[in-house]
Amino acid sequence: MSLEDLTVEELVENFELFDDWEDRYGYLIDLGRQLPPYPDELRDDAHKVRGCISQVWLATEKTDDDPPKLIFRADSDAAIVKGLVAVLLVIFSNRTPQEILDTKLEPIFERLNLEQHISPNRRNGFRAMIERIRDEARKAA
Image (tube, rainbow, N blue to C red):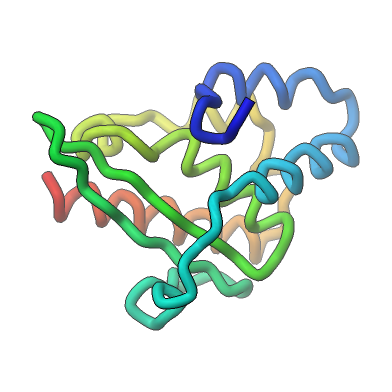
């Protein structure tokens, strides 16, 4: 199953299949490997996510649907961060701005149990990515 076809529920269920965090990290890295190629011309300051120690770039595209949906493309230079990016794309990409703003992340993150297993620096970067996605949704709303 490709990253684009993965639902939030399937993502959570896949994480729950693994008993230990070594296996979950492996799955996270595999998710990052499934990110579509990110265009070199979008690896610039305008697309860089501030607050991340790793390099992270995020580009937003609005569909012609009614209401329009936001499609996110992203990349990072760090394997685990790429996996975290992939998790966020599963949660937020191809949703309307209002759906993005209405998404309650806490229940999803509790089930994924991610926050307790990533370093404080990665956690700060993860939050910076979420805030950037929500900013994009507010601008598009």
